[in-house]
Amino acid sequence: MKKISIYIPVYNQQELVLRALESIPKRDDIQILMCDDGSTDGSYEVMDRFEHPGEIVLMKNKENMGAAYTTNRLLDKCEGEYVFSLDNDDYLYTDEFERAMDELDGTDLVYIDMVVNNGDIWKMNPDTKNLYCAGFTKFVRREFLGNTRHPLGIWCSDWHYFQDLQAKHPTEKFTGIAAYHYNHPREGSMIWLASKGMIPEGYKVV
Picture 1: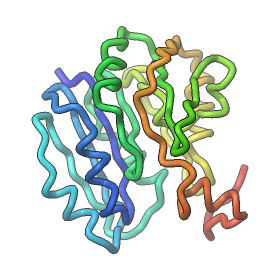
Picture 2: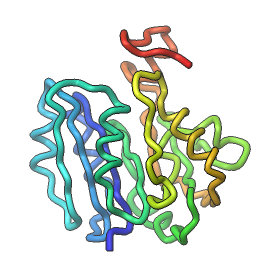
Picture 3: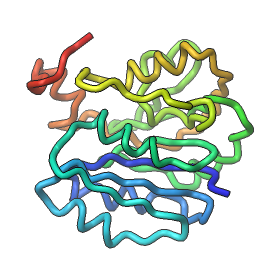
């Protein structure tokens, strides 16, 4: 039985993606799914060499298709009771993540807290969940997720994905466990680009 499917869209992160992968608990009830989105560095080779006691699913886009497309492709292959998003430049606090796994009791959305680069903790609760709505703040029960996916061609598709989940009236649990390190701020990240007004061509803001 796969308890969790951890899915990782990857693009040009050969220096950081191994750190992300090695932070995942070494358990055979964790399925790891990775999709290389047309990287031009050695990211795919790093992923291809990675070993884990659970199932590993490795995919590759022939060309760069964007985070939303890649994420959706990964979600389509998830088989765990819960799905969880790990960004390729972030990492988990392994022991705390295992503690959070113990909180998975059939609730639709199970939230964890995040630590950012200056040491601050972004705490998830009913008032902050819409501020920190990125996929990696929560476990999502796969049966509840159903066919909900990220919209294509929209900047910050995470926010729209989260609103679509909220519209389904989920049951929710806030664990208060800081189990995720969010590499923020990071020059070149999507949030950093947005702060500089540098929205890539082909995306729209809605």
